[in-house]
Length: 400
Image (cartoon, rainbow, N blue to C red):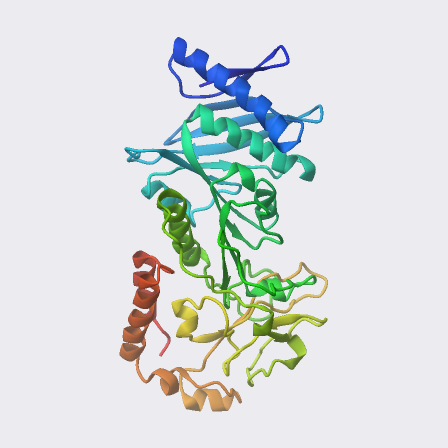
């Protein structure tokens, strides 16, 4: 176990770090004390990091932190993973609030350490101050020159509130954006417009320190619990990986990321005005006043970042579905209604959407076109090459 001590107001608090014994450990204690004091002053929050400890846990390190806020102590657990090839220059860290393999392997490959910390058990008022406090110590104790953050949903809101502690943020499905100058990339999917409290779109474009990406036809949840229609399982990970790579280069080298691809208010329309094609078994859209992205003749969304499997679709993808059992749990996934294979098949079901054979002719053409679309997104830095190759590989199994 590795620990150092931070002293504040006459009391010692153990803070972990990887520092050798002797004068270096003493300097680490001094740095830790200065960080605690400066955090309370700079952020106006009575947050104090009492302990930060790491211990070996297989290939990673288990992390335990104790944060004191307004007289109450809270425990935070997590995992620290370090890159196989440490960078020769300045060290960088990616902090995630939920363990995920969407971005973590890419971050390690790019030379960043990855720290997963679970703030879920903390009261809402304590989460942002605790996050700032932990990060303040990590910068000094682990000698991190650059700290990036990635989170989704309510955790993304917490990171927005604590944005001054980060060099860059990758936020998905956040209800608010950072107020300060921290660079960030925000993304969201189709489902946010169909919720009970739908998203209200921006009237203006993003500021220079921000990029916004709407992931057309993607729903955050792919859980098929109690859903009538087939679930929309399109992954958002390929987009997140490309956006993380862009954020990494933006914060490390000053390379500007791709331009935003997000709808403004003019790209939306009242939900009741959507002209849906005749689609067998299409769930009824949720009721209530809302403005949603415009759709094409297949019922797929037009604005935003259209990944290869939406630019060259084999189904209609929505951000809503229908509950199978009204007394059961909510169906929080979107729907995916496949195109018919042939004209005969679609006419049997009164499906107005062109069949796969009608629109693509053959699987060979479909695969070749998928390669063109995927490679174009790679050149635009909106898709990584390995993910482009994965889309092409999946196209070879299209249900023609």
